Image 1 (cartoon, rainbow, N blue to C red):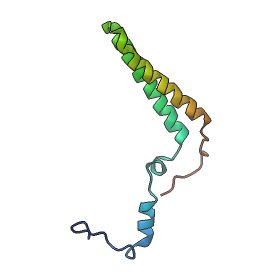
Image 2: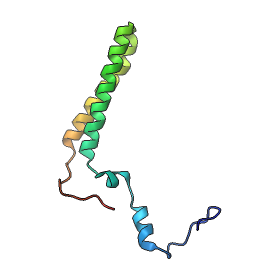
Image 3: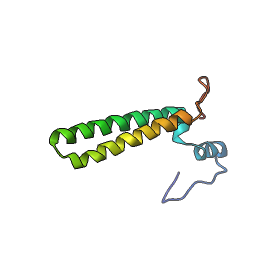
Image 4: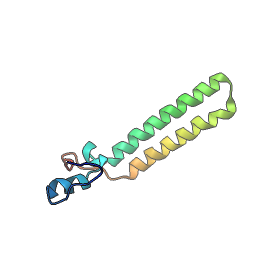
Length: 95
């Protein structure tokens, strides 16, 4: 139906086109931004601690700051998740 970059007219299926235009990844996955921030924070803290330990064992103390920067970013994400409103448990994501 789409040939050479030509977009089909919206009159063919306007409801489906509107649904596609309103799509966002957070609506597919549930949209709980606080949980996403917690997950991101925990991952960043884990990666930061791991990098700091690795660089500490290798003896390159100057590069440990990279790992500590990731730890600080992870803590910031956890603080951000604390202040974000949680979505109700029974709420269904938009489709």
